[in-house]
Length: 352
Ligand code: AMP
Ligand code: MG
Image (cartoon, rainbow, N blue to C red; front, side, top):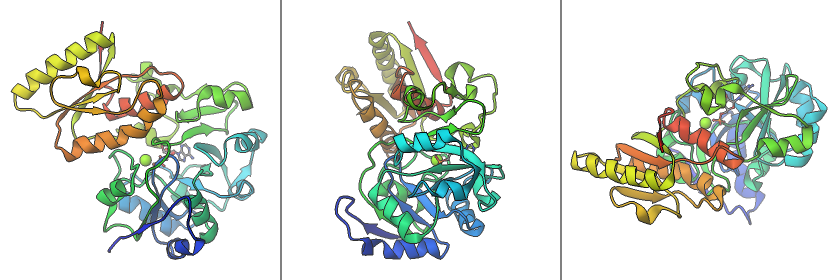
C-alpha cells in the first residue's frame, strides 16, 4: 500500500480538502490526523473490522483499547448506557480538549474497539482538522497515537510517516501538534473520578469541576515496583520507549550535571554514543555527548511539547545511552514524569 501524505493548513482549509480522508474512514480504511495532543491513527470505531486494522498497522496488543473521538457531546448518549452528570460537567469545561473520559459502553460499541472491556473511552479533540474529519466521515473515529506500538508518540506528520508509511491509507499533515503528550484519561465509572493517565488537564483542574478526584495507584512513581495492575490497559506496556537505554537523574541539579558529565565522558571513551536531555536552564553546562534542549523549566508545556521529538532524534542518531534530568511530579510535571519514567523503564538514579 502507498500511503498518501496530504498537507492541510489548520488555520485555513476548505472542507473539500478532507473529502478523500473522510471517504477512506467511511470505507473502513486508516487515516492519521493531527490532534492537539499527538497525531492519531483513525478508523471507524463502530466497525470492528476497521478497528482491527489499527492494531495490525501499529503492532498494538489487542487488549489495549482505543479512544473514540467525537465532534458533538450528544454522541455520549449513543456510546454509553449511563452517562453521569460529571461527564457533562467535564465536557462543558474541557471539551474540545485533551481529556478522555471512561464510561460504561453501549451495545453499539464493539468489543474490538474496547479491548473486550465493558467500558469505552471518549474524547472530543481540540483541533479543527480532526473535528471536521469526524463530522464529514459521520463516524466516531477510534484513534490511538499514530506510532508503531512501543515507540515515542508522533508529534509531527514526519514521525507518523517514519513509523507507518506503507501500512495506512493516508496521513493528513496539519503541522506540529500543540501539546505533545497524550490526553489525560479520567475514569467516571467508579465512586470517585479517577485519573488513569496524567496529562495536560491536571487533577486540580478536574477537582474544580467535579470535587474529589483520585489517582490510579499504579501510575504513581512510588508504586512502580509493586506490580499493581493499571486500570488503563495501555499503561502497563513499556510505552514511549526510545531505542537507547534511558536513565533519569533526580536530586540536586548541580550534582546531577556533574554526574552526567562524568558518566558521559566515561561512556564516550568506551565507544558509546551518549545523548543528554537537558533544559534551557542547564544545557550549556553539559560538556560531552549530544545535548538536546527539551524545553524550559519556566514553562513545562515546552517540555511536554519537545519530549517525544527529542527521543526520536536520539533514535535517528543511533544514540545508545540517554541521560535525562527529572521534573517535579506536580501539575503538568506529573504527566511529563509519567512518560519519561515509562520511557526509562523506571530507571531513576537519585543524586544527593
Ligand atoms: P493511545 O490512544 O495510544 O494513547 O492509547 C489509549 C489509552 O487509553 C491506552 O492507555 C488505553 O489503555 C486507554 N483506554 C482506552 N479505553 C479504555 C478503557 N475502556 N478503560 C481504561 N483505559 C482505556
Ligand atoms: Mg499510544
